[in-house]
Image 1 (cartoon, rainbow over the protein chains, first blue to last red):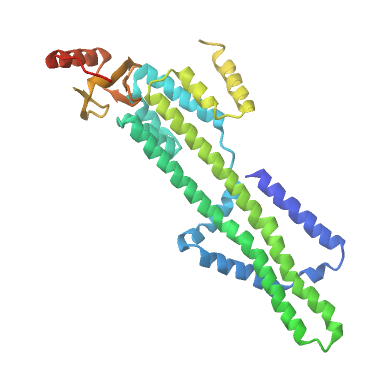
Image 2: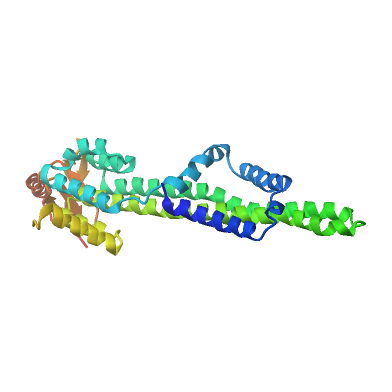
Amino acid sequence: MDLATVIGLSLSLILVVGGIVAGGESSAFINLPSMLITIGGTMGAVIMANPVDRIKKLGKITRIAFFSQTPDLVSLVQTIVSFAEKARREGLLALEADASELDDEFLAKSIQLVVDGTDPELVKAILDTEISVLEERHSSNKGMFDTMGELFPAFGMLGTLIGLIAMLRNLDDPGSLGPGMAVALITTFYGSFMANIFALPISSKLAARSSEETVVRELMVEGVLAIQAGENPRIVEEKLKVFLPPEQRKELEERHDTEKGGEE
Amino acid sequence: MIEVSRLNGSMFILNADLIETVEANPDTVVTLLNGHRYVVKETPEEIVERAAAYRAKRGASPSLT
């Protein structure tokens, strides 16, 4: 569960809706035709703008924004360093059994490449390509929400135009001007609401998750290449520490002290 | 040129004149002058032996400019 997404969304909803209710006349903000125009129109346009396969993943991608966790870089560094230690003790081939037990496919695959005797240049090329393909995929998934963020206000505007045209046809009744105008503007409100409370924040969250994952992958590549070059585990750890923010570096050192009691 | 084998057993020919370092940790890593690294099955001693044998066979020392 991604607390930040849930708390943020709840906060926006509660405060915005609270503001509407506190202002009185909250029933004026509910209008089914306007919702259909804004939400229906946007969804249709998003479906039109993307390939079918990506649309099918929309629910899954939304779940990522709500349920993903920040990866634990410290444990990852420890795992890779323990691999480096094992490789120094028993040779690269000893890693094969461990690699198959890993949860992370990418790391398992990279270790497997090394064990298979692939040349380091080639290992790096393969893994770098994999990372760039991953980034590409993430950015196109995030792109769906960017598209939504653009289209919601646009369809809001469209609905408002529809409302205004309907209103202007009945100008002979000056009394209906105000209410007509109000209904017309509701779609703009819905569009702005959906774009800024839902679509754009989710897009930003996905971008953040994507960059986190890229860092994780780059850390793995760096680590695996260091293991393949037979570098000293201490050096491997120093190399990987670069990827950690300062507070996590401290955490890594603390875990060392508790585990090893100052060995080496 | 010396014949060496990768961890998966496939053989390839390495230009012995370009070898910069050979380390055992514990897999043998051969680093070339151009920075390329190769992990090979042979022990460092075997590599040195083969390189020396190759040079002896060839005679002249390489002209590295």
